[in-house]
Structure formats: C-alpha cells, structure tokens
Length: 283
Image (cartoon, rainbow, N blue to C red; front, side, top):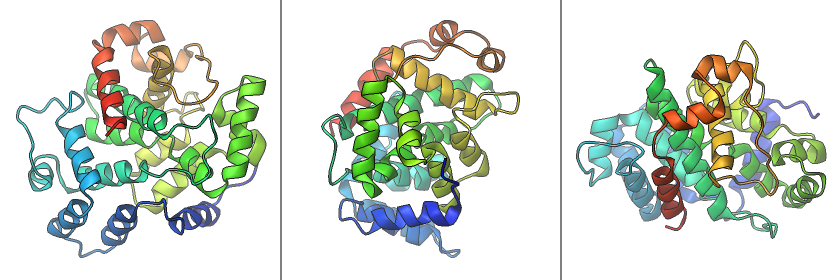
C-alpha cells in the first residue's frame, strides 16, 4: 500500500482543483474559510453566488434529515439557526460532491454516488441522535463525505479508477478494496487527509480514516459510518459496482446496541430517507 502523507493527498487535491469540473464554489469557500478574519456574511455571499449549492443546502436543511420545526428560506437564516461551522461544512460537502469525473467509467454514476452519500449521511445522523451525546450535524457531515476519497481518485486518476471498478466487478470485492489493490491508495485515508487539510473537526477526520477498521479503539462516529454503509446496501442505496453486505461485527453490536437488523428496525422509516436522497441527486 502506498504510504499516504498530507503532501501526497494535497497533490491529488491540487490536481482536481485545476480540472474545470471541480466546482468554483468549493475553491471560494475553502479560500474564504482559511482566512482567520472570515465573517459569516462573507461566507453567505460566497454560497449564494452558486445557486445550485444554495438550493441544495436549503433542500437538505428542510428535509426529513433535519426535521426542523419551521421552514428555512435563506442561507442567512440557516447560519443563525444551525451555526457558521455547520453551514460552512455542509456547503463545502455538497459543493465537493458535485464534482463529476471528466472521464467517467460506464459503471460510475454521479447521481448514484450523491444518493449514496446523502442516504449514508442521513442514517449516520440518526445514529448520532440515538447516542444522546453527539452533535447530529457533525455526524451528518461525516456521512456525507465518508467516500470523498473515491471521488478524488476518480478525478485525479480516472484511468486507474476505471480499472478499480472493473477489478471490483470481476473479483467481487468492494470498490474500497479494489482502489487499494489497483492504486495502492486507501481512499478512506486519502479523504481523511484532505478533510484535515480543510480544517474539519478532528473527530470527523479520524472517523472517516477508520471507517473500515473495526476494533476496540473505533469511535462511535466511525462505527456509525460503517453501519450506515451496510444499511445503505440493504436498502438499495449503495454506490459501488460490487459491494456485498458485511456481517455485523462485535464492535458494532456493542457500540450501537444490536445486529444490523435490529439497528435498522430502531431507526424507523428508512424509505423516506432513501426517497429524499434520490430526489436530491436528481436536482
């Protein structure tokens, strides 16, 4: 496996930033939030300059995922209600997921990728709410960006990404493992490095990095991402060309209080979450 460093991860990100398909709104939000003197008003103006990101941010906030008591009609209102960092991270996540590989493989669907990311985010958020001692907003962002490393590989290394999809299909292994075999890159570690570079919360960075490594040191957030991924496969909201459902692990059962089946039952209506994710991906 290739040893990932922040410099190497950033070099891949730099490669995507020079591709036209990388949303300008991502670059604007990143540039602005790196400035210590950044004011909420400046961020709001940057978000509002991208009508697609604005629509999608408001759509997510007003969906069943957040279950807010009243409709939010503006980014200004969203910042007041949910906070500067939540809206910044949500806007950045949504804008980043808008990347489309310039040489997409036939088996790659950006709509399916976005649907999976949003469905996973909604499930992770619910698991955070059930824990009673977590910020559901942070859980949602972690779920939304858990596969961001795959998208960066698809942008920066389209040929190898296509080979990884084919490897996944022919060898019946997950796309995560296929990318590792073909490129030597752990896409979860890559995504974590980039989010660290973007100054996302450290617990979110750790959870995305460790989402496949279930052991006694796994955090509640990392295990929630793992479980949400498996649940997405069960409800038809998966992304990879081949992705079998992995059995429950003892660490997941101890942390979340049951098997995958009992966890799914405890989450209530998942069809609504899936329908919302499908609608969002079609925007």
